[in-house]
Image 1 (cartoon, one colour):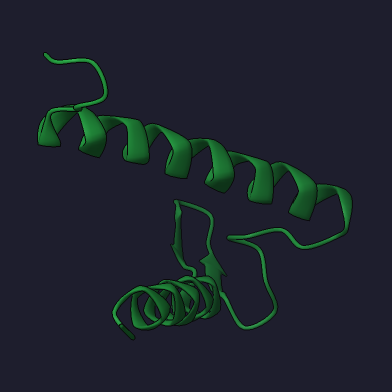
Image 2: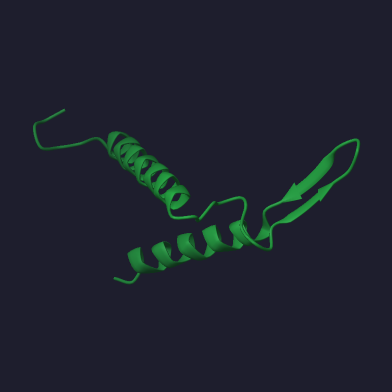
Length: 77
């Protein structure tokens, strides 16, 4: 590796690490402000005596919208 040159795989790993840290901070700060991903109004929860079913549809839609917006912003060039 030459000084100032980063291998594409190394760059990918660094970016993935930064993204994971940002996601973690958003989740932790969201909990403090009352936004609990996975427990939003509209998420489907059915519980019975022998088990339950849980599908966080509103959380999935919210995450999909945010990721689509981010992808659109990066591909606008």
